[in-house]
View 1: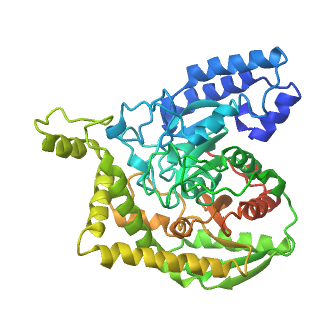
View 2: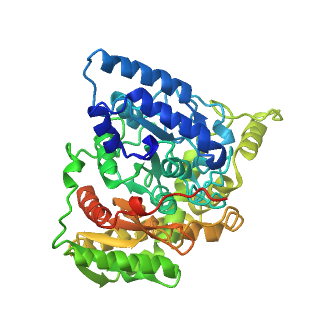
View 3: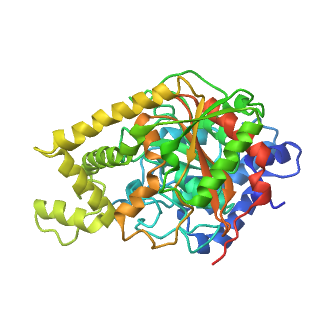
Length: 489
């Protein structure tokens, strides 16, 4: 097996047994980036030279007998929404094309404390607004399973880089499905933690009450390991919750006898592709064989989640993006001749069409005369969604749904139809509205060989439960041993 095909825990084992060095591992990933990046287009900023220098320094420390952490020297990729000190952080927008972050986000401080090696900033939909990574100012990322298809979004660069073995794992952000949906499209594991479990300090804001940093990995064990690193209370983030230190790797158990699983019938309706339904039904049968108790139930309020999400998300985006005015650290139009023109021309020239669309919608629902009719009502429905999920988790340990109603679609297929693109999030947005943890794991492929994802959801701070359920299924089905990206064109 090639070095870049190994999981992080497999790499650790080979480092421990002196079968591989830190330098060899990073050289292999850098070679892989040079080989696959021209096709996949996952990186906005490559940091391969710096990464090689850092790898050599860490290798020298090891050779000198210095004691280092278990993750020292392991490569990682970072979504370009997360501030990295001294390195460009663009949010895939012309507005921040030349912005160099003066500080590290809290999650980056934790990554750096482990002495992991950042090999680059990864592509995304502009300001995380999109479901295909086609809305990046810089490039369109392609799906390693089929280069004519999207990798999902907004964290498509992170998902594609992991699936293409250009990094062993990566960080992303999830506002309405931006980790889970691309993980599903790219056949890897993607976890959105509970809102408040991972600090958002230093993460460029899209919708502050929905955004959450999470992880992309090749398997569930790596997912638990990386969550151990980034989770934890942060005084710099007022939404951060202190639940104490947990070791999520202790949840990696195969025995799920008696696990209570709820299957909400509203998530298996007419809009779900038949092959996706079939894969999910087969996965549910697997859980029954492993001793889980499965029951269908109704989660009818979820049908209002998509409209609720887009009202709340766009309203918060309208507010958050007001700071990009051409005055301070952002793009400024060269054509502007007055203060008013600086605002108008800079924002008109630097924001993409999807960002403008969401700002306009968000401003509308917050405006006088419409606030009560839309934004206030959306917040009331949000409470109903949260309450119904809470009621469900009084009965069930986890809820299983499709991650996406379809497999990855063709590049350009939905980008000209915003409503169709928004429907790609129909299975994931309610989880963000309720602030719950959700994980996507691969559960099969369609007749064309494209991966299908299954979403597992639990109560707030129930990451241990979904990690346990995901790990048990993964060990039973061995998806990674059966299927690999083909890079077909």
